[in-house]
Image 1 (tube, rainbow, N blue to C red):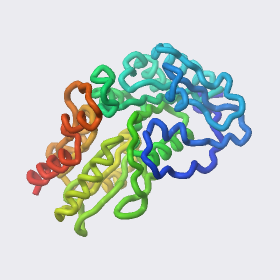
Image 2 (image 1 turned 90 degrees about the vertical axis):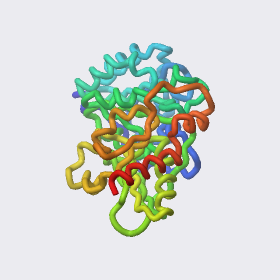
Image 3 (image 1 turned 90 degrees about the horizontal axis):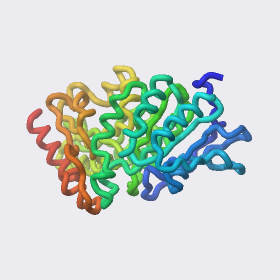
Image 4 (image 1 turned 45 degrees about the horizontal axis):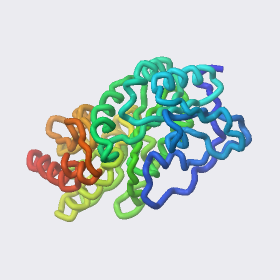
Length: 336
């Protein structure tokens, strides 16, 4: 059995979509996969026996023994062991820890990408939103460094429905590793197919128009956001739309998947004629300059974090609705 033939679950319909605020770190755990009587297809665990173990554990199985592994604080060992499990062709392994710890795992993650192993990484506490734990645990530069690794899909969904959609796709795709960047804090579940919103199912294309509003016509500015910052982009878009600006909000949960779409689709999401673009992510902007272009702007964090309540930190670093609105206005003024 080859590594791309790892047995997968008999996929049924996903659970009902959540409507209440939900941490994206919880959304994957709440996705119940109907096993259909097949043998276990995932083995998982985390650095500590905690909620993160739950996020790497198969639900709906009466005999979970041997499926959940408490790795201890041994991230490199965990990542290396996951590769061995994946290479066996008998299971789809998953390991979880904080997003600030991938450096301990990087050699094994690189090998997984190089060999095309279907390993799943669940990296939580993915921004300054973790709050008082401070800069020691706030992974400001990690998303950019992980996106630089070839053949690794880095996924940062913006709400629970996007998390469900991208996980559903990953479970059916076994030719490469996938890394989930998930929030500790609860995020609002955005509406779907109403009031300018589209369905979160578009997340499976990596990037898609999540919301658009304002006067009729082409968008004057495009806001590109991921993860917990998607809600900020939507609220900023509503503010600008109320001022008479046509605004498009693009959710970009996976840069790699979006890059694989054909030129026509990418142009339909990010029209080349719209040069006023703003990326919104509570992390380094290094992986966004190619999409915003020379005339675009970024709302980002270019320093280590700090210890304070999450709301205080987002305000301090300017990753707020007001900050996005001001940055968008600046982009519009330069591209009017």
